[in-house]
Image (spheres, one colour):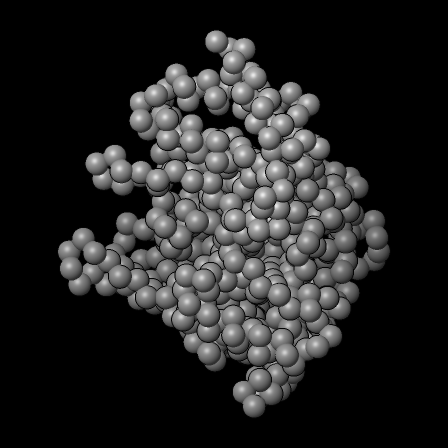
Length: 361
Length: 153
């Protein structure tokens, strides 16, 4: 009964309707590090391509709670956001929650989705990788519940709930079916965390029973990482709790060429927030015009698809991938010499050569 | 021992830039890392990940060190019941764990001799067990290592 209720809610979701002459308003959170410059390129590209999206920029600093609350309100109003990563300094006290985490939990963006696909233009050790990772995004080890009852002894609570586990498993299987995928693998450590991960695994099995057309198996997280670095082609769709999702998605990003390439999406019942998959701030490469814009640009295409602006999404995505795979203009992180702006210019030239949709250069 | 760099891992959002850089980098360029120290779960995950990078659990040794020098050395692979008793298993992992044990006991010369012989045999590629792409038996592989040790003396 719970599964049915959840499925119905997921089917009923529609993106917010475009207002004011068919233009959508999207919340833009520049964040820190490379976020602002990459999002400027997104804005530039959208303007060039005449994409009917207006951005409402909300800056978030780690200093006050106000900023993040403004951002959350703006996302509630607009329904959709595109964001850079907000830096969280580990030197701040435990009471200071990660701003990114706060955003995800307040908006209940329970599913983090990442699609790792090998790109023909990028040299990597392994090829033919096509893995979808669905990571529970609101609980688990990121519940920020820690205490030090005895000095020098810290206890950290990992929260796994039946509701959220069923919800994420349902999301994974539904997505697998929609995309015509054959197998879902649950990643866990239930041999050690018998109650926590055990509950997660049990929920996955229950949901799997309702999808006889999709194969289901489970794999322990340490074995999973070993398999990923030796035979990643064996994986199809993977579903897992929060921390393992963090680990596995980063390993997979590394397998297909690095953090500069893969976009990520965070979906909730009512809201969606798009960003780079590995959520790097990239402080060391900020403002040097060397960051790879691919991940952020592809994230903006995912956002356009979400708003049902498929033509624009496809146009930009094809231009990005052509520049990557055919023109082979690469930034330093994937072994090239191009600057961020050179890559973006090349993408714009590609878009312009394809049709009349663009504004004048 | 020449430790160049020790990197302490924490995995909350807060240290994301180091941790994530570590995991993506570990897959892309693992040679940049030297010694890594970390809490239990991350160690479990990263040790298997690294084992995958160097050829799998068949060649990965380990040791569990306690206070007062009490230690247990073991390979981290499973019991492999499907190939037990068939003279097929790769003894490298357990052998290198024994080398770690010898070093722990201060018998560095013996450890070095066995390790060199083992690495040379694998490098030579003439006598390898099935998991490393060869056709030799476990006893043949071991005999080859013994021969090299004898030749060293």
